[in-house]
Length: 252
Image (cartoon, rainbow, N blue to C red; front, side, top):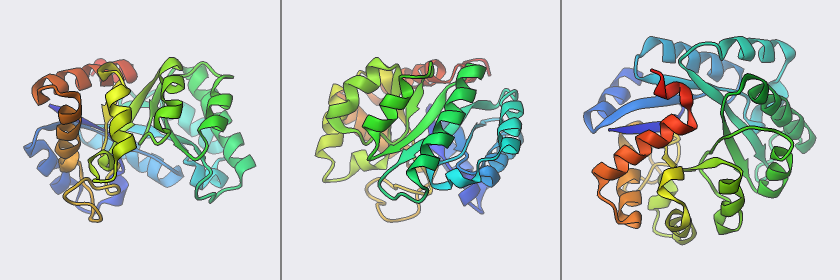
């Protein structure tokens, strides 16, 4: 069975249908990820609604201006729920720069501090800011996953030595994904997670269309092909990886 470790269920009006389609092709669990206050509250509520849905809660760098002390207090309390696996998605995005960089850094550090205090993992969104992000991470004792990893070969070793899992999404299936494929080849199987980021980043053959968790199978097949491993064996390894990355999942 497969686990979609990163998607945004708040973006769907037909949640029950898309979950059923995914279950029908072997996706056994889903992690709904918050990126602002509203979506974080939604992710918690949908995780409580469905037995096989879990949540990550946090403020994305695009929405860094939303962070308040009230939200941090709520976040600290909400993470007591066993269905909350960690804090995310949080990080730095210097590609789109939808929030001032100083604000992004401050919000990133405050959420890392909370994750460290609570001893829970993080899901990181880093884009065009890997050097800055790793410099910041050196000041915190946190682990987790680099969601939709885009740091290439140059940052892979640092990511692995920092204790992070590497998240691969639809782009690994794209025809021009030579560097991403090379990253998969060099990344130990025991440090790989797969995710759809649905409704975004649909894999081939659905590139450019609305993505949904049922498409996780295409990402799994591509990883299986690159790693030259049977998909059944890959599924077992990926499940163990999820349990290691998100210890609360192992306790469900």
